[in-house]
Amino acid sequence: MTRTLDDWLDYQQRIHPRAVALGLDRVGEVWQALGAPRGAPTVVTVAGTNGKGSTVAFLEAIFAESGLRVGAYTSPHLLRYNERVRVEGAEAPDAALIDAFARIEAARGDIELTYFEFGTLAALLVFETAKLDVALLEVGLGGRLDAVNIVDTDAAIVTTVDLDHMDWLGADRDAIASEKAGIFRAGRPAVIGERSPPTPLIAHALAIGARIVRSGVDYRYSRRADGWSLALRASTTLALPHPTLAAPSQYDNAAVAIAAIHALPREHVPFDPAAIARGVARASLPGRLQTIRTSPDVIVDVGHNPQAARELGAWLAANRARFRRVHAVFAALADKDLAGIVAALAGAFDAWHLAGLERESPRGADIATLVARTREALGGRPCSAHTDVASALEAALASAAPDDLVLAFGSFYTVAATLRELAPERASRTV
Image 1 (tube, rainbow, N blue to C red):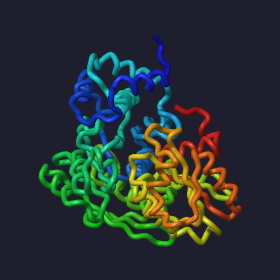
Image 2 (image 1 turned 120 degrees about the vertical axis):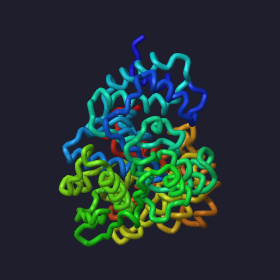
Image 3 (image 1 turned 45 degrees about the vertical axis):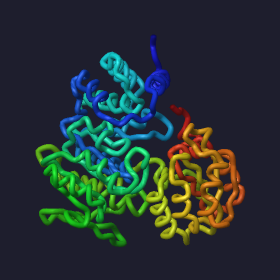
Image 4 (image 1 turned 90 degrees about the vertical axis):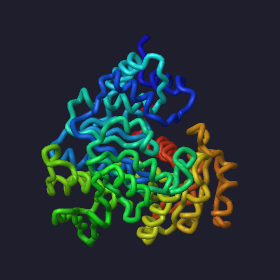
């Protein structure tokens, strides 16, 4: 039977009883049967609670500006599954993914694989075929038991550690850090993007003999009106342009990406300051404080945990003078810390438009759940409740003046629904 990409994705979601099944034994066995593809001679793995996708985007742009063939595997996607696998900046075509899925199906026998494990193996096969110089692998969940950890990485990055996916990773930052530290390798760079990381992150790196590269210790940056400077080991200082990506944390994400490149062996990747500067300015990523409409401005952001919400709050505080009023359109998954997200931003908005998300995802919070779990955090602030994102957007735009801001956030699904509603040209094909 000939299968389309949609057919394959539907099949993958049906054959494993659970959406998440952490562990490397099953996926590792199939990986070995496929010839243990690495994806490229040089592999960089990126984990973290927030900032993973942006850090991959900076790495991808810098490596491309350095003249290297680079592939990036990220998740989740916004509108098309193909977004998850990029080769030289272009989404993998259906045919390449279908071929990879067919090879995986033939190799797996009776071994059950999850949707994410199929995707990880497919990305590695697509990358091998493309003859890349560098493969960038974003961890899906945690690190130690995530499917991308089957590959023996040349450099591992942990961007941030905060509270998310606690049912899987543990109840506090120390437990979550222990899981993320599992991507570190002996003798290889372990690049840490936080200035005050949880103790287990450092302890594990030291215990296995990884080469720690730590923000605030081994590299640091300072911002200026006309750009920013990054000081690295070996008395290397770079003068860099401001990132196009807008959030304040994008300096941290760019810095940790550059520190990782600096730590890699020169025979594998060049360290070209001019290419790095071009890459920092060029890097972009949909759904991260992305403006999709003006008059009024409509901005979307995938932030979906309290740490990301605090980052949104910092951006709003710095940009509040640009707007007469600021309206929130908020929808999120039911398994997220809904009250914590809202509490971090409650005073940043003049009005809240809450939306149910169950039409977008089986995990989405319906409007009754969302209201019940955020009522106290909102503290009586102006708020309206809507069955879906489209209705919430309609209400927000109806009450917004041309010099207002409407910020839609809370989930990848929230952003995708907003793009389909307000920017259909970007969402002409969905998977």
